[in-house]
Image 1: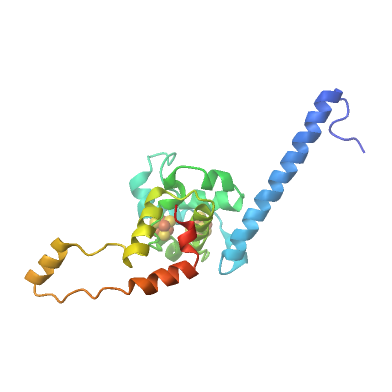
Image 2 (image 1 turned 90 degrees about the horizontal axis):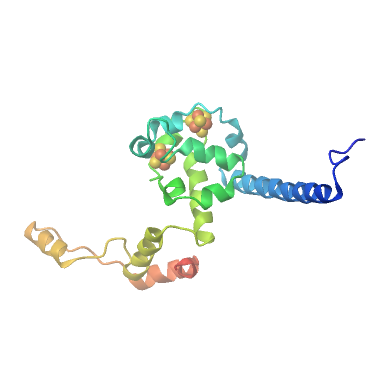
Length: 194
Ligand code: SF4
Ligand code: SF4
């Protein structure tokens, strides 16, 4: 059988084989990434049924406020989903924070998808991967540190306490910070904080 590198000069043939090997490895990495996503999805086979209707992006509130008329910029759940299926890990995890962190997990896309794809599960997987690689945006780490130190995302402030008193609202019960820290440590969160 004729091979594609027949007729190439020795140096070109060497490059051809090197690139072929590299491209084979890339394909393997892409398939592995896709497999991980499929395994993470509640029903692995469902994500193969997307027929690109774009209902997810058409109804996403973040897409509505971040894209231009040509959808060349901004947040795009359908685009993220397609890149995930194509195993484009580097494009997804190495891009602008908005690429995957724009999702607010409002669940609208899950509700409108005619194929019952749980897109938010896929996006959670991507966010987890981003943090595991230490590539999460700064606000995620600082918010997590706040929860770790205070047991809640927004610590009590004297102004809020005074306002509550004026409105005759009861004091907010403070969380057990020690217990929350222990939980987060056991979950390995502390090690992921920058
Ligand atoms: S709404 Fe569902 S089927 Fe349509 S493009 Fe999005 S993921 Fe695919
Ligand atoms: S869950 Fe995320 S991707 Fe889906 S509609 Fe809401 S913001 Fe958009």
